[in-house]
Image (cartoon, rainbow, N blue to C red):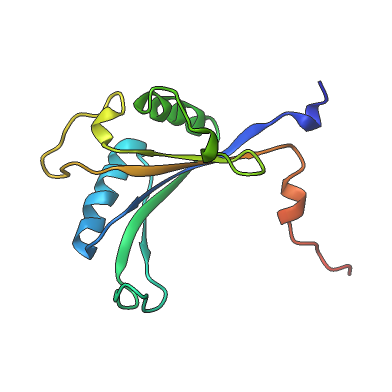
Length: 141
């Protein structure tokens, strides 16, 4: 097989959307507990049609790359019984799925401080050479 056709996992992104800004801290705590990485709080950029004012926390997300993403993805797929719907895939092969309750993930136990929260998992795939389309060309001297 041509090594340039080999598909690999670029990143796994976990996202939790919340209704209230106070719940964003709980979502952040859960993602840090699951991944051990620094979590980013997502905020509104402008006033939305839902009446949420600018700058309010609406969720938390974390991106995992490399070998750690493969191990995490195996655990997350076990939470959905290793089944993904056909309409979860896009045109380029990337896929997303949701986990209803974090206690379905192997190795995580119920925490009363967190409660019951679900999350979205987005997996981005790539082939060798995809970095070329993202790099910035340097000016000649």
